[in-house]
Image 1: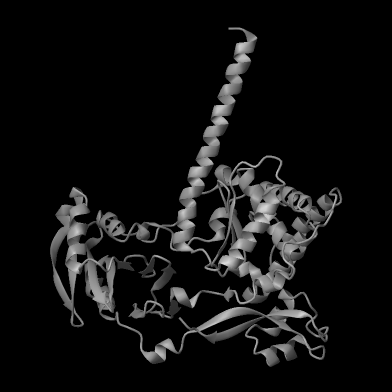
Image 2: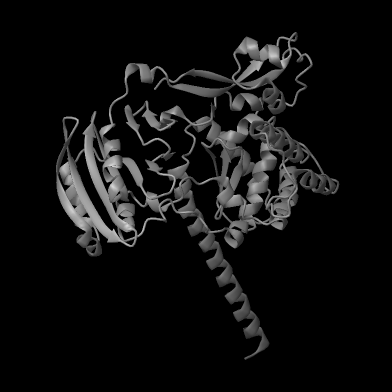
Length: 471
């Protein structure tokens, strides 16, 4: 075989492998993106999402080689963060917005995540060690209950940025820092903004948690002071040519953004769950872990022997038809565990109940799927527990009801609000005047001001207000 042919074959082989790898990124990212949308939920504000995307696209335009069609979205999560999925999916959490002071900081944060995605860090390093909610339950009933619950019981209780970014090595984090600020500078932003937001984020987290950041060999992320030292050293070699920002007033872009969890998705109060938009109430056993996800509520006991999910079915079919459809789709191997299927009266409403039971190495396990109508909706319960706890979790279904007026009027929502200083007040005095729900010290941190000094007249200050939630 001549040398030219060998070179051609090697080149073609390399191109094919790279193309296959890129397609792998895209497929992995698409799958994980659906998980993010299901478990976190995209923040429902078109204007804010458009701004995030326009900033991201401005950065992407300066990549030397763009591997993917990038999408930038705002996700509803209290933790201050941003993360990247393979294939060009970049997310900014609502929790980081109150900490940001300007567009340069947001550009540096997004630039960091673009590098993670474009350099394919997620494909190389992402971990799979996700804890299963009910892993401790033996037998095959776990499978049928998982199927009935839409696989939710086999999914992570709650995905967080830790799943996507904590698995990056320090080397990859440093690479994302170094190349991310170069990308931001190419797009006309100040790379010095990255250490600013990193330092402010750590201060805020330390204030909220009461725990100081420590330097540990086992931390995936570099220690913030060391990380910032590296960034500043790298900035010395970067040509900075700032250009006009996309926004004329950065803070006002996010005025009114939800702080914390959105009441529109329902709220958890100890062992109770209230949903003002769908208008229902349910009460779980005390001490249970409750997770509110966009598609379902998942609850389980602390030892993960009993679990329950609640979701809403198609209201156009009856509970009996929903049960029949389910029975027609279950795997043959589960037939031996089927105990009964029947109409079921609860709180004066007719539902449909399917019961299962299985002898396991740890005793008898019972499971059920129950469809119940309420206020125009069909609610689907999927539960599993040891036999002795079965009636205990069945009682949860009886607590399902519509909200009272007092309950509706007790649901509050926190929002970020931009206010103007009058020039004759400290942050404590401003907080009192504006009914700020944030601790004055934390308010000073997120606004990068001295909490003891008078605030300059006309300065815009970020505060948090609490208002009655209105559907």
